[in-house]
Length: 315
Length: 292
Image 1 (cartoon, chains in turn yellow, brown):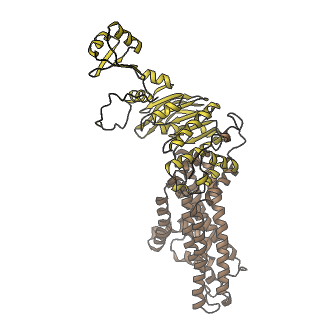
Image 2 (cartoon, each protein chain N blue to C red):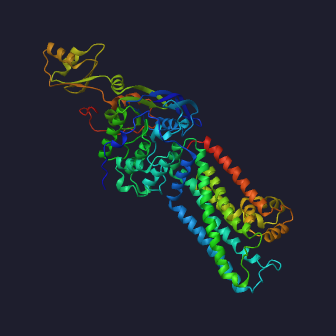
Image 3 (tube, rainbow over the protein chains, first blue to last red):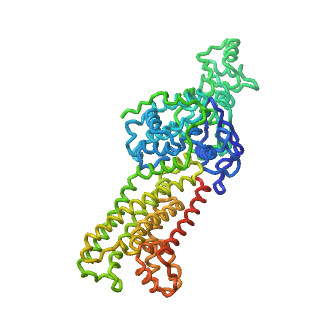
């Protein structure tokens, strides 16, 4: 359980995190989503007591992190892939961390085996790939068999096998009743992994709800209709609640009506339909629409290929 | 290389909420710092260099003395042993450069690589990490320095013993000087460590500490400008190294200065310890407050 109350962090005149409050509950995977610079990492560092909040407070399992007798068994964190001395081997890094709590060498061997680091455990961390560094960070997070896990971008740099492994691992940990708080910029990954979402933009919480709810709230259901009589159909469908967009000749996108309703209107008007597809919102769309005002670093517009038929779902 | 990862049998044993048998204690932190110290290469390198430099310079100076002086000739004012002590002065000066590098890297290596975040997450009260590092570093360097000084002494006896120029252990101050060499090396390393903890950056801290020891202290003690002569005797290495020198040499250097900060061996060492205490206290205060 992580509880943040009015958490604020300012660096000089810049406010990185602006009075956010949220609760991360045990027993499910909570995703922490936001554009670059939104304050995700700063928030996670404040939870871990690494950064001191300007205002507000945050507790983990009922106490500020620093007040736990045995912090590594309360919280395991992957904050940056390389919070590791580059001159030390992976195994010795874990041995040193384990020693701070009196955790035995057998546990070190266990987490090395679990994270698939056996082959490189004796190599110096400086030569590790990003993916190996992530595995080592996850091994360190698991060292104390913690009740709460905080993982900042855990799948960053992992190969597909590793991504799948992290996904299954966090779900398994949550199913055991642990608290799992996970940030990622990969929306599709969140959609597959998280049960609940906390969305942050410009240091403020934009949404805090189950994944399905976030998606439903932030996207409007769309129905795609292909018909040789598109113009007539658009006329029949038009009403204050329904908007019809002609994407291309013969192809309509209908907002505000279900596919059943569109089908019935077409049948009543004796119109031929070639396609009738309900398009549910994706998490990606939801995310873009939620954070469009909150993106700190906008990329320049890229001229893109025709996307009219690429409304694929991310889920 | 295989990166297959097992599913999670190792996790099932302790469900959440069970009271943990593990905890952070000072003993555990000492053990962790001991592991950290000996699992990076710089430790073995700097300590080896320290021993080699110490023994090598004592041997070189002794050999020079053996070539140029007759039996009993090397005494400060007729007393034989002073030359034997003199061999340790340049040796300790040079050896101190190796241990201050180790002192700095022990802490800045964590900041430069990001390791400090893992350390702070494992021991979130932070200052115990600083104390345990100091204990481990001080005792390790003290032990290595005792070995280096003992080897230096043996080499000196081998080379100069025949001419009665070597240090005589029955001399009242012999153990103070030889033990002082080891104590000085361990203490100046903690001084460097404290600077590293304050500056949190390897290059900046190394430049500062080496600049201080190699340039600033030497230059300030060489300039015959009166205000500087008030300050110079209280600089960390100038003051601290008095404990590595025989009383005759300390008295001679004190008499050369017109403004009388006539520090004895132990007073000088006390000044160095005061520097260390102030810097370590400041470092601990800031470590507690700063973001890592």
